[in-house]
Length: 216
Image (tube, rainbow, N blue to C red; front, side, top):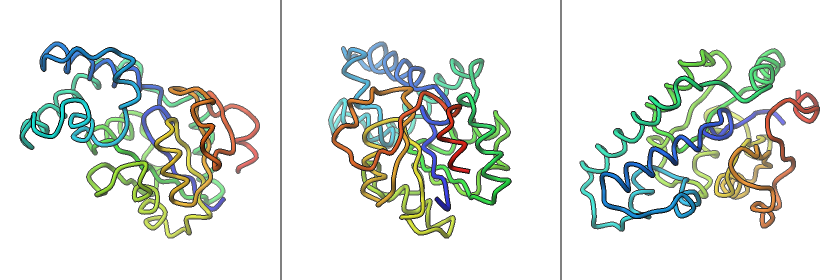
């Protein structure tokens, strides 16, 4: 592979439960929802505004309200997760190895820049990342391939030469739609949930097993 494309949440850091908790409290305690954790979890993909529409329908909120709620949720998430902010085990060494070998790395995430900056600056890993594609950079969210295709273009690498790292089925599906193989970090979903995808080449709980050393 000539480039590595990373999703962020649940893939580089183990934080998806904190996102779900922040939404769960906001939707139920302040917006009058009655959603269970199990109802929210499969909806945890794509842009925040898309998530709110999926949960409440297209007529509930104005654009300004969606922007305010999105920011409020992310501030809650960051406050709760900040003491636990760390890369998945083995990832720093993998990023260092990629940089030493001249393999470019991009982030392709549905997160807003506010959250991406929280991770990149909080963990001081900007030197290892050559390009970032956020929610603000795309029109179509995963499983549409736009995020990963744009990340590949920004690195100047053909899609077929990119390896994607993801943690959710919709993200792996976006990689397939972009013509890219995908590695799954099993922080959020079980292997069986990816059975319908033919582009998944490996499953791992983190970046410490020998498979990742073979990529460098």
